[in-house]
Image (cartoon, rainbow, N blue to C red):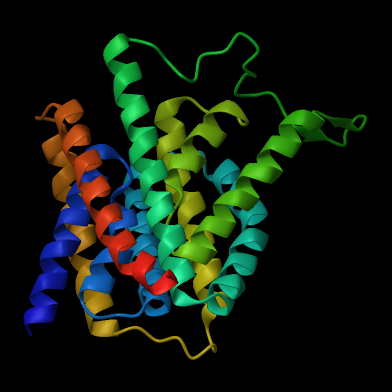
Amino acid sequence: MIELLLAAVAGALIGLSLGALGGGGSILAVPVLLALGQTATQATTGSLVVVGVTSLAGAVTAHRAGNVLLARGIAFGAVAIGGAVIGAHASAAVPEPVLLAAFAGLMLVVAGLMTVRQLRSRRGTSSGAHADRPRLDDPIITFSPTFMCQCPRALKVLVTATAVGLLTGFLGVGGGFLVVPALTLALALPMGYAAGTSLVVITITSAAALAARAGTGIAPDWWLVGALTVTAVAGSIAGARIAARTDTARLSAAFTGLVLLVAAYTAAIAVPALL
């Protein structure tokens, strides 16, 4: 019972960060499940449920608000499925200390990227601005009336989508910190559309990775996962309302510090086992 209550509280915090900051919170699902006694493979599998369901709920809300380009999200997600399947199978094949060490490293990278984004925001600079940025209606590949391919953009989409899929399948995270910039730069989506459309991509890759893990014998405590998921969805709705009244810069700085602390905790578990 105590574990279920802890999972519910942690899920609410994850949802609040997702709703208030538009992403990043799902990376905490794996450490939370580890702290509640799950193994690394169980935690990364359970996290896929939390990430997928929360992203689906967010995608529905964003779609109703008109902030989702559904066709582009589905296309990007379909390209990412291959990476998600490969990552899911690779996750089951590596030792758990390696999996934990990789996850701790990922959290440090995410915290670093969030710090850079905050510094740029304070300086009033935009990382997405570029003179050669394509327009929203520019196609990447067309077959009629003649075949045309913007191959550099197509390659960028392929590489980024595969990387997102690998991350989702291997570590059980959404990879929104990769998806949003990719949709902005490669597909020319404005930031508002990129954030909403990325939730469609994450839903697809999470479902594909979870399906790939089915039948492997890796089963987390579904009661814990369920409590974490339900409260994360509820928290994301509350977080979106809080964001409308709160300085998101302060929230983002606090969340970055939390990610660093959790990364240190995860590394403290992984490094002794590696040695």
